[in-house]
Image (cartoon, rainbow, N blue to C red; front, side):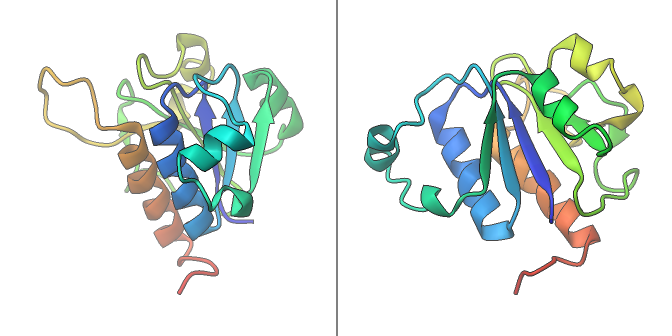
Length: 156
């Protein structure tokens, strides 16, 4: 097992498609928490050109609590602009870890972030009027650092 990427109630299908492609090419498992802002039916996926979707290791959950119940013993990190810790030198990622990312419009809910504030991580950014990086970019940045720390398992 490599890394687990969790999208909490993703809203934008293009972001999820980009993240799915990253997961396929890095061997990460993708977990989606409902409700989703789009359909996962085959017709919509084909129309969006997601021909690699069949290669994706994907699980969809009805709730965040369902995911946490299934993986009680696992380590979870939470990507948020509200974190004090940076993703790259304050975290030692290991195989099987989960990294949870929030909605494009509002991030992770307070109750998820506050459930384990020591495991909240962020990508450093200058302070501007722009809220944050695009979700798919943030997933790529953090997941590649985690995989680097694991010596890029099963990757050429």
